[in-house]
Amino acid sequence: MDKNANDTFAFDLENRLDDFFSDSLSRPDEPSTVQEPPAPRGRPLKSLKSTLLAIDWEITDDALAAFIGQVDALEGPYETDKVAHTLLRMLRSLGRYVRTHKANAHPDTIKRIMAVYSALERAVDDQLSPREKEKLLSAEVSAFRQLKQQIVASRAARPTAAPTQQPSAQTLLAVGAVIRAIHDLESRVTAELSAIRKDLERLGKS
Amino acid sequence: MSFINTKTKEVQVKVVFVGPGRGGKTTNLEYIFSRIRHRIQSDMVSIKTQGDRTLFFDFLPFELGAIKGYQVKTQLYTVPGQVKYNATRKLVLKGVDGIVFVADSAVDRRENNIRSFENLRENLGFYDIDLTTIPLVFQYNKRDLATQGIPILDVNTLESDLNAQLKAPSFTASALTGDNVIPTVKKAIAITMVATRDKLL
Amino acid sequence: MSYILDQEQLDGLEEALTTDLMTLGIQSVILIDMAGNVIVNLDNGKVSHDVYSLAALAAGNFGAVNAMASIIGEEEFSLLFHKGKSENINFTKILDDFLLVSIFGNDVSLGYLRLKIDDVIKKIKVLIDPKRLK
Image (cartoon, rainbow over the protein chains, first blue to last red):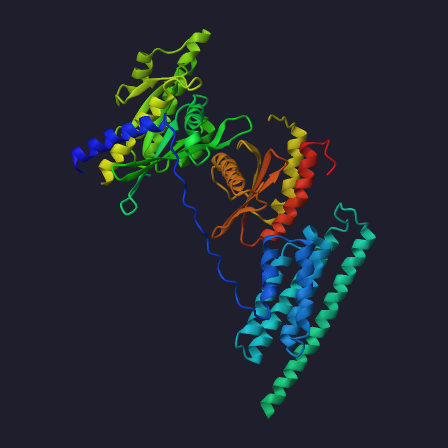
């Protein structure tokens, strides 16, 4: 660069530094604005998804209550969709389990909730054939059953309750209720799977 | 790192105060801030421990206004001086354009000055910056200790310990009283800005 | 701020962090003070990183984020979490002087980890300052 130009710049700069550190002068800052992205359009599972994303970051009583409430609200609309309906019931069961046990819930529970939700999203949104949907449901039921076994096994290994204010008898009752709910869900799932198979057979014959 | 926006005609440089722990780097910035706060918009940011030791950095940005058609902006930083914060120090040095090395004139800090200077050389090396070419000013701080009967190193010793090779501009100073703090930073900004324009324009 | 922790307290802290957090299968848990000093350092045995630099940077990072919170008019942020491709890092303040740094993979849900951290913090507070009731 031109040495002369740099020299005069240096000279002016030094003068400015002298002024700056003795006189007063101020220059206002330009304010900046930030645009908010538009809110996404509604879809049936949108609220449930938001709640689940929030739960992924932070598990609170409010979020769990909202989650269970939203699952309950979806059961009506999806009553005729056996796969979606079953998945929703699994979600409710898992949600209630976490709400009861919080930090003492099995570490894989949240993962399972996310997986069941993913399956629900696919069952509802994607163009899956009845057979594909059934396969999806089967896989989730199997994983759900596995988690249940792990929960029962860990309860057996640790008979004493966590050091909280809850007396152990009440905790066992709550656990019993959850296990009964899981058994109940299992028999419903089995019944619904065989109903789906019968439907498929009928469709195949006609 | 230096930034010249030829469209908006802005020149911005980063000058970092380095040196041994408790040598007076933060005090320098605090004094500078006290002198210019009435005319700048931003506050000085200090991230420090409860014991007032710099934990991450002190930061003081300001604009000098237009010079030869260019808006001149400066960012002053200090680094934490304690040895255990080397990783943080290295981070703050990223993109440095000019250096003020604040040495502690107390006799019992002589080794610390030398070690801190070597550490600076290493950290700059990490960014492929050559200590012999980066704009640098020495400040031999805490000269006021002599008035309290505390032995201080004479300037020749400090020069030969730290500045024998570079022969960079140097100032004796007392950051606590403000003595020679402004001349130090003015020199540092001047040589950094000129070197930046030289390099980029 | 200065504090002294005796061997009993340190052992108690290690035990609480091991039982409540390390058993989840996370990579490591470091309890540090706000100046970046390491108080308890636990890992899964597969870690070779420089924990002292990590601690200094974590404290500096936390300090910087707090400064940002002030600038925007917040007292502090309740979540300081960085998501990586395979490992993530979460910071939780304990009392005013300590920071719990957790490094964990994607197999642990952040929400669940934060629940466990809330639990273990109650124990840590009692260990560090027995005059506390919670």
